[in-house]
Length: 196
Image 1 (spheres, one colour):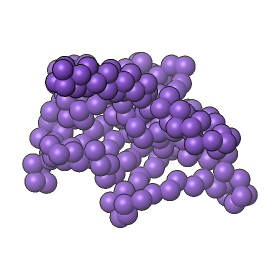
Image 2 (spheres, rainbow, N blue to C red):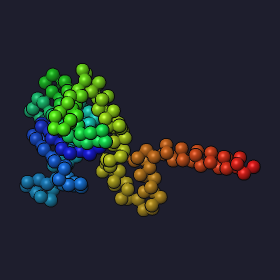
Image 3 (cartoon, rainbow, N blue to C red):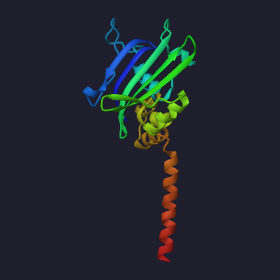
Image 4 (cartoon, helix red, strand yellow):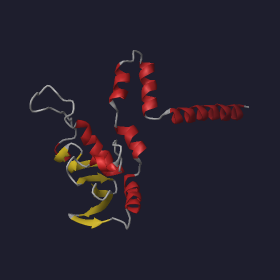
């Protein structure tokens, strides 16, 4: 999945944002306040990642979904255009806190024309989106996102073995390690049978 654009309105601390990721292959999100260019806490850096999690997976770190709507506003909207091996798509996800209702819309680009893939219900559209993405929130989170706590523990380790173990835990690789061990044992048993 390659994200081309990300737009939001009244999402958490942002009145509006509009990001175009097509102009570079690598991006860095750096927050600065107008009053102090050296201060970056509370400037909305993590909110950009929250918007990505929300638009693709309906995931947020608020106590209630209504809290994603910017204070004093009624509707929050996040939309993205992205590409997969199956084509180019657009998602729009919104939340109306006045009536506590969410909405999800999904389209596929056919040339420059948008063809609706939105189903009758949000949950049916959610399933369609998951088919397009080919992975769920947990896989996404473990593949592309490190929390500050994860990074602190990596930087505080002294040995490469400890760092390797932390990466295994972050990416939930213990399952693959167990399977690898079983496969090695099976290969050894098979080799013994072939030799004897």
